[in-house]
Length: 266
Image 1: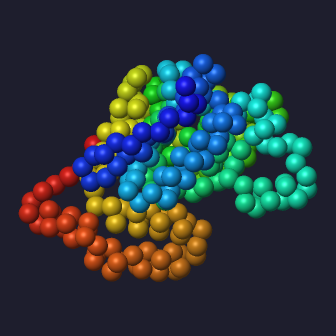
Image 2 (image 1 turned 180 degrees about the vertical axis):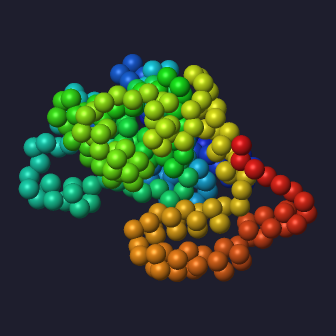
């Protein structure tokens, strides 16, 4: 059985790319084979214009992902690398867990149904929409065995939660439950046990049904303009106006509105 499975669902308006981390007997922890498959899948979603939204989740009912397989840590991190190899990895590497240094600019939905620890928490943070089932647990658990966050945790957690929310998690490795994750902004929505994936796919279908050119342009503006001075970010946003308004998807969307059609993501 493959440690990572991808599926493509064709729905009205687009395609959903579903990635399943598939090592439930070891809490979906990432070994070398899974990392290579994840990199291929993550790159495919980024580069394939036919894929609209990605749903990333873990197999089974126990875990989203518990991070790196410590038995494979030497392979994932190449601990015996030379100075030149280290420099190349820092500059050009894609992350020990696969594609974690690839920034996705199309919608990603992550779903946790259980343990979301260490590198698994880092992968969860790559979701632009993050769903948690009520029994989900989150922790920078690698604090306990001395492994640093190197798959985006020190980058995404402060951006999502602010320093006040991120640093206590990073410093202590404390475990928090889904309700607390929701309170601090780590989870966008909390659902009942067993309902997470269905909820993610429902949202993904609704996202696909919306005009895509405006959606993708707005996401690029947010992600590319976040650290720019306000004036530059506003100019970047303004550059989207005419190309998007001339796009087929926007023209069709406006026509539907003028005809009285209404659509809300619920």
